[in-house]
Image 1 (cartoon, helix red, strand yellow):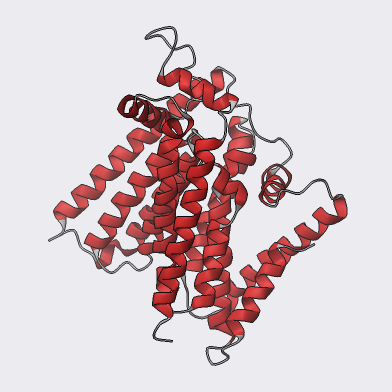
Image 2 (cartoon, rainbow, N blue to C red):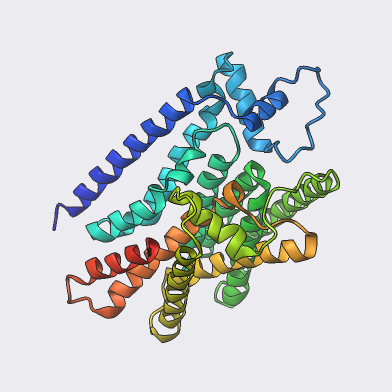
Length: 375
């Protein structure tokens, strides 16, 4: 048992290196897609300073800027050179996965279970090998979630301020990589502020004035960038650029498509999808039961609240702003968020059932895996 952390580190490092090589190989050898070619027109427009595609949804600002830097440094427009920022984003994503899971490295099965859920989705990995903003958004977005979960116990105002700053920073970088993740930034901002309002009496203003000033400055800057992104989204909506997405509700447009893309299935008929939906309902209501019955709270509360808020945001923006439901690549961030939720369900179930029964983790893990791949 003493060697388990070493084994976990070795397994994680091996998996990270193998997947990084896989991502880099694909980035180097796959031909450019149509969307990537359009993005390159922003980096090196053929018509000089004026760029008619500046206000196109295909322009993911941070990704476009990083492509421009990569092009300027290397002097090359090769596939790997222009995709290099997203290839590096896989390292950011891997770092976030490690930080989120390292506290369970002594429990080898749970640690590996989390690694599988967070890393071994082929559809997710595809987007670290293309010159779009999706890989960057997933890497920075997951780091933002890490700092949000890291502050699950309000004990130190300095600790809170640091986590607040980094969570807002990385969620804004994710939003500038893919505008749809502005929902993540707003959700995290809301949860941090609710926590501050709930516990502010425990950390009086006296003696912490500079820290509270810093928190207010971070809040003001974040609101400024939210407004900036909102204004850009209004321009895109006026240009009828926000057309990609679904119109059939979150379950069909987002959930069903993500499952289909993640396991690369052809059409198996409605019976297959009905079983998938039943499995999801079982897991969902099982999760609600856990939340209601257990005495001790855990990170599952925070993760589940974030997941529900992101789903609610997708529904609200459809009915309030006529923005289609996220689907395929625009719904990618639900993969690591759902994976993190499933992982924490496994952790809580293992702790809840019995700490003395050493086979519980294996049984729980097999049950959750069977739910994920319910035929």
